[in-house]
Length: 253
Length: 67
Image 1: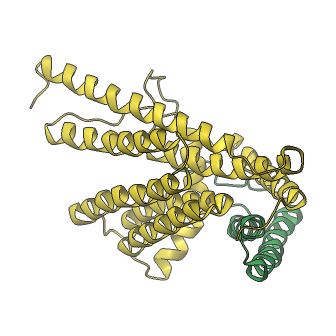
Image 2 (image 1 turned 90 degrees about the vertical axis):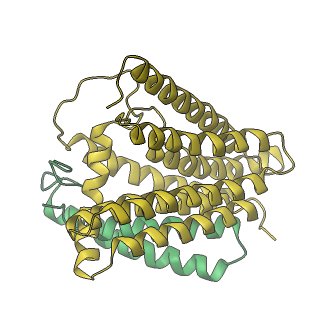
């Protein structure tokens, strides 16, 4: 049985997150990346944010390579963590679910980094990584659906799950036809961030507002799900149109 | 090069936040307090290392991360 309102703990958690964000901004401003042209369908998280986070993870990659942890182990760990995230969503442990979602996204980045550093990157690993990613996303969305099972938000959760799979499927199909496909506003890192931080903020707001409202409400998580569904659908459709246009212009190899 | 305390800070933050999450939503209050104390100690050690090196020392992350 989940405990009642905890506004004090929520305030402490908000302060901890604020300190971490301040330190992250410090690192972000000191991260230098090569200038890239602005594209209308570039990912929402730009190259500087991605470079900053890879920088945060660099010492962890060193450690994992030194400990002989393989990229496959990290890929499977990501699946386990995603299943746990789904379970946490289903149980109503929203803050923990957000934490697990962000950890799963981090493991998804780490497995590629470790594969490159240990020179073990190859088609087999790429296949397992892609397939496990889809199962992992499905597991998380399944738990999210269980949390919203009595709400109309179940439909946007289903749409977000389907559209997220379509974003990846469209890319795979297009690349199978020889069309490079890396653009798109809401790719996997964006989805992890939106869902993970959305869950964090939602639970903090729920606990902070609980004494006033009288019960926990997850309006923020619902909004994050709506955004996720809209952005993923937009990205999947955009990729489909882009690939179709390229093929119509004779882009097939 | 990574900033001083480059592993301790993120690790401590992750443990601390997980502990706070368990404290907020679960009935696992013992595990929550354990994680809060452990995470707080590790994060404080990381921040202490960074503070001793000076705010103008190496950044939180490598300057040319990802390049």
